Image (cartoon, rainbow, N blue to C red; front, side, top):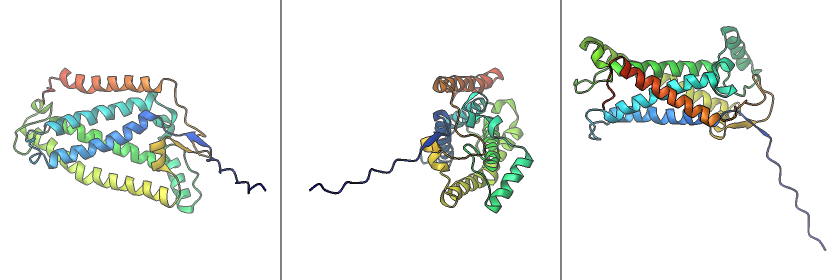
Length: 246
């Protein structure tokens, strides 16, 4: 007598592209570099790096990565382009009201509030990185690549603002960003964190697009943007009379 027939395994829900690989690599690489930036400064003496070689090299890497993100926001995939997710005040307020009332339609890419966070984080990091180019450390042992272009007062001001922006602006923004992602994931069941790892989201109705448009040759395009970003940052420092010596 034949045994019971087992039910076929449930098929996995259909998924659609949400984030291209370059965007995801940018996100997680930037996170790592920010942690390294903090650790390489706070523990420089313990690491035997009194002249902050790691911290300064890391800062140049962050600046290059940020410029890459700006370029990718112009020529990258649909969900990575600024034109596709930066919204005006009316749309932001409309989304916020829907979020409070529970009627907000999910977005495949950045929602209007998330877009504000992205812009705020990029602007904050760009400001910090730029100030770091002109700053000197507390003991005046070492300075950024452009510290000679301003006087001692300018060096001290740049270092002070660099530190203040980190503690007063970047850390609160980062905490808010993490909390918002956790809230969306746990409460609203929107897989924002998973999507930034896997690159996909469940197929469904989204307010911005049904799937991301990822251009052919996205990897080569991303590498070209990275080369251009390095040329802009490193070449720009040399062009104005700075030094890349670590």
